[in-house]
Every structure is written in structure tokens, then in C-alpha cells.
Image (tube, rainbow over all chains, first blue to last red; front, side, top):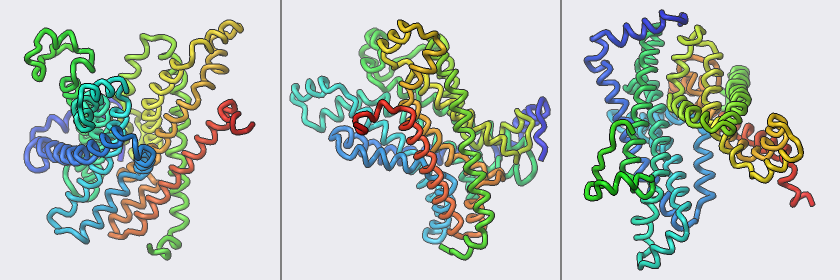
Length: 254
Length: 216
């Protein structure tokens, strides 16, 4: 397939993206983007539920750090495509046909999103200033209260950076899910390749990149707004509207 | 495991392993070589740091399959050209390493730098013979992450037909057959372990002062 450089490529992508019929229907851009986002968000939610409690416990107790760091590294060495194909074959043999492929993709996406969230959670909790922890205990807090009211809020910015890495990993791997005949934006890449339609492939790739960048920006903003003003240095702003801390309106320019 | 199948396809698997080694290894080296001067610039001129790190973060956000597909359009290469994979992974490695190099150089103890200046070291010689060697453990740790994730990312290029171990995964999918998939995962993990060991021993060899305690 020719992918000749210059205006031809960009013109082709533009033409494909501005064709109204490419946006509607079950194979349209809206539907495919929504599918892609659904796989990603579901997987990230599962990863959060698993990784944050374990990471918080490890960071709080300081036990099992070496094991988790080792596991996270080992998981990074496993090829995502290989995992996906293997899980897909296994679940087609062992799960009801209607949910087999979705479950396999969800499991792989969540598995790949867990290590960054887990490591950033334990690193964030472990890095809390011991003096702060002592002060909380001195105020009569129990271990669990210290963890939930002091350590986790302080660790929140770091947890969010792990969450963003996990999200990116899931968005990227959700593209690959098309190889086991699932939907999502990866469909355009693979179908475009099969149909020798470079414009379609490149438009799909561009949409995936946009989704990743937009999602990452949104998560960064949410993390910034959720973090305690004392942690992010947003103190001055919070002092102006103390009662509305949870709904602080940040000017669009910041 | 179907060992017969592996035996019959040994020649092809060997050639895929070799090209996988090249496609993951070359970008790691290229990325490091490009990231060192950029990171050094960012550590010396503070105003370079924020835009460079932001750009690196943005590049790292783009999923690999998207870059593999978009690069042929930008470079004018064919879609199957392995050059796309090498360029894409070099970009990722640079994106990951620029920040690591800059942070590692910034954290060189100021008294060491002052001592080098007092001994008459000019900036370039100071960077090459004093600051970079001190930064090696941190840069090396970053490079281990980059190298290992490159091994996994190369496999993704099988989706657009670039020949390497990822072919074992698409083949297993088409044939509904576990053997090639397991072989591919094991070989990828082995390559990652080899790269990791190589980088670790390179760090050890280039920082003899860190193991004086053990040697003595």
C-alpha cells in the first residue's frame, strides 16, 4: 500500500474524517469512540478497585514492596498483544460466547493498568513525611484513619499520575482489541489495512491519539481539582472560596 | 505445547527473534544518544526544561499503534517498512529519557560540580567526564524501563504486518493455537531479561566507584 508523503496523506485523512457517513451507524466514529472509551474506563475502574487498596496497604505497612516492584516490572516485559490473544483464545473455550471476548479484553486491559496505579499508590503513601504521620497519630487517629484521612489525600497527586499511566496503557491496548474481532477505534486501523485504505487507518490512528491526549488532560484536571489545596499549592485560590472547596472554579486559563 | 510445530518453524522463529532484537534494541540506543544532549540542555538552561518535558509527555501519550500507522504518512515510507517501528520507538525512548537525563544531571551534588569547575574543567568536558558518569545509575534505571517496554511495543507492530515475534501472536490467533502465542511471550520476556541484564552490567562496569566496598 502506498502511503506517499505530503499533502496527499493529510488530504486523505481529512476527506475521510469529513465524510458524514463515516460518523454514523454501528461502525461510525461516534459508536467506535464510545466503544473504545467504554473498554478503557471499565478496565481502569477494575484496576483502581484492585490496585489502590493493595498499594495503600503496602505503602502504609511497608511490607511487600520488593515483591510488588518485581511483579510490576515483570508485567511490563509481557507483550500486551500476546496476552490479549492468549486470553481471547482461552475465554472462547471456557466462557459463554456472548461475553468471552469482552471479558478477555477487559481482563488484559485491567491487568496492564494495575502496575502503574499500584506502584504510584504505594510510593505516594510511603513517601508521606513521617512527621505528618506522627502528628496524625498524636491527634489520636487509628492506623486506618491515618491512612484514609492523611496518607491517601497526600498521596493523591501521585496516585493520579499512576492512574493517567494506567489509562494510557488501557487506551493503547484497547486499540489492539480489534485483532480479536472486538470494536473500538482499532477497527479502522485493521479494516483500513485489510481494505488497503491508508486514509481510514491513519484517521483511526489519529482518533486514538486524540482520545488518549484528551483523556489524559481530563484526568490531569480532575486530579488537580480533587487534590487538597494544601498539597497542590492551590492554597490562595481555596482561601478565597473556602466553603466551595469541592467545586472550586478554576479559571479556564490555568 | 506442540514442540513439533516449533521445530518445523524454527528457522522462521529465529529470524523473527533476531529482527525483534534489532527493532527493540536499536531504538533504545538511538533514543539514549538523542536524549543525552537534550537532557543536558534542559538541565543547564532552566527555560528549556518545561517545554521539552511537556512535549516529551505529549509524545509519550500517543499510543504506539497510532504512531506506527501515522509515521508512514509523515516520513513517506511504506506501511510495512520496519523504519517506522524504529523511528516510533526511538521517539518514545527519547520522550521517556529526556526528563530522566535532565533530572539526573540536576541532582549531581553542587560541591562535585564546583570542584570540577575549580579544577578548570570546561562545560563540555565537565558534562562528559564528571556529571554524566555520576548520573549513570539514574539514567540507567530509566533506560531499563525504556528497553523493556520497547520489547513489548515492537510486538504490536505485528498488527500492521512488520516481521518480528509479534507474528507469533497473530498466527496463534488465526490458527486458534496456543503454542506460537506461548513461544512468543516467552521469547519476548527472554529478550527483555537479556536487555535488562546488559544494561545492569553496563551500569556496573561504568561505575566502578560504586562497588569499591564489595571489591575491597
